[in-house]
Image (cartoon, rainbow, N blue to C red; front, side):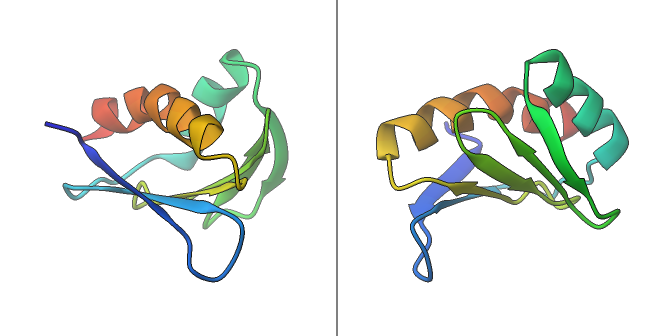
Length: 90
């Protein structure tokens, strides 16, 4: 069973990723985890972080992510990779 719901974002060329279960991420720990996987911090707004590697990724404490790309294969790849982070937070 997949932990995530990946669907095209209706308002932009992006994909939205939501955990099926309630998640409470510590964004500072998540940011460190992402940096170790070669994501570059763009913004740390406290209520969300934005990182970049192949595309921009907005990450929220709820585990919701917005993958800013129109490439579905890339979105699936990043969803699987970053999904490991969300699995650990559930």
